[in-house]
Image (cartoon, rainbow, N blue to C red; front, side, top):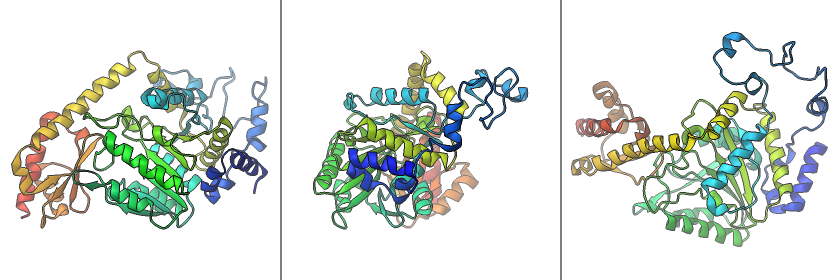
Length: 429
């Protein structure tokens, strides 16, 4: 093992041996290189003549660039063209951490790691897999989960996704979750909590969240060592009262010494910048120290360095400028209001009893999506094709359940969409 990796491992073992035990073999071996080319380049920073950088510089010392590109960008070239650090830019990392506390006031000064920048949330999930999953280890997910977990975790790291039933009696199935978490005896457990959930658009109620936390704490008290990965892609898009508005990460990061909370989030869905490809991975554990978190940040940055090198500088610069804009919150509220109007249109439309002849809506209260379960005997793929060919409506078929992205449907079009789905289903009976 590289001595730099062993040095980080020693820090983690000293500060929290549970966290060390949770690391995968890859996670134990990885490190961010402080020596070699990167170290020598850091030593040379600020020199009059710097021939260490793997980039081209104009004679005036600014980044070399094509005017055909630079003319379209209203930012200082230094914020666009050079590489960003593998950790992410320090300014946006600090700003995102500040925003985590603002959005989750119950953290109330709880010490967390400094977020490490990822290439959006898919890459963040993948890096969590790199850090914590060995081949053959199980990851607990609900039976309704984002299909990309299969590629990132099952195909990418040979993990095994093991499912529990998400819903019971119109709400979160706490009993099924508890049974799944306690399967297989005491040991290492890894789970993903994705709220609002993709594809269902469901976030647990305040009471359900408390029950979920009780289940995890009880399992930790029994001696289980638990990694909780919170996929917060749709954070903040909650449309009903009584629903948890904070990320469950807030409570998990303070829950128990045996529970390592890993928050994967970013502006992709929150700030409507799908193509920017910027995300963050943040760590929290009860009584976590700055030394522990620094070691985890270094390992994560090492994994990123060996995977994509670093995330785009221009995206980080544009986002930081937006976060510091005095109209940012106002503009974000305006977009939230549009989303809420679309959600309300779906809720109102589904009050029509006729739809229950052919489909039933699954519980939903947040996010971008909702799902309908087709009646027995109706083929989802046939419905999907009829909707495209005859009604010019596109939906996703998931094993005779249709996922509908109301986030992409104007409120005025919601009723005609469901009427089209109803008609297509009737044709299939």
